[in-house]
Image (tube, rainbow, N blue to C red; front, side, top):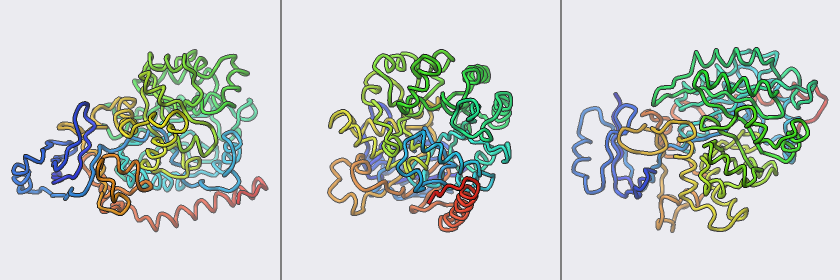
Length: 471
């Protein structure tokens, strides 16, 4: 069993309700749990613990330690298709139409490499738990691409909530994706059952829980939405999808179903504490009240919403109403990064223009990035640092020029200062995965070149087949 003692922590942010930040504290980790948290006045006990056999002592002086951050929405495969000139200035539907053609080229190696990139970036930014919305299953590719993603995340050491996404409404049925990117409802539901049986672990401290996640109201049928929710509730798993991301989506639901997006989802059973949506930009006040009453969650994705020009979600209103809200980086082709620190900074700033300068205090951002995500995922052992809780944590150095003059509030320094810093150390489930600002098990330079080779080939194949220039 691994044993670590992080000593003399400059600022420890536990995120335990009612508990202040601690200075000079010590955290003892045994196995995959936090075993003790000692104050500065208990340094003599910490010294004794440091002398116990097989204990690695980590210096926490001039560092701030947080619970590991929780990313509530991502598309890891998109790390291979970011910053593409053709869609740099496109809104969501046009962006999707351009990139669907490239995603038709996804194969097993591309999924493996993109997962390494996305998880690596997240871990380097202090994120220890991520969900991932994987819904692209090209007809010519392996039917088990999600398996590749899950096994890759497991090797890296990320606490993972992969979603078995789906698209069943292709162009010939009035949808956006090419027909060879969609699957039949029977095939989708059968594979949902397969991956749940193979990978889903409902136990506390689980490292993998499967989520079911039809892509969006405009890419699946009403019947598939209803049957997916029925299957999920029968098997005891959660559900996720995009909702209220753009005005185009709202118009689609009104024209196709005669209902606003949330009313349409409610009709199919998609509200409740086992459901969360990505984005939620265009909910009205009555819908926000319904979300709060039903405990339906939201993943706030500010960078993607700005990148695509989609809008600013009314997150301060949601928090005031009691809606469960977490934070998500979204796909790396609409955010172009998988950096939770950057996302937290964006969440801090955007609502000061969108709502008011006091609309988003830094502590609210930290809550979304930790406790909010943990509540939506139903994993109370993560998102806070306390004895008996998960040994998921992120440590950032403060003694850098970025934070000079910022020590009046060290816990908020990484939100207000710098530009999405790298973690000095990231630990997941008691395993160190980032040390000294570098990934333990990934060669970044080699991964960079391997990823670029795959991305280049995908673009070449797409340009050859479509006759469209992407660069």
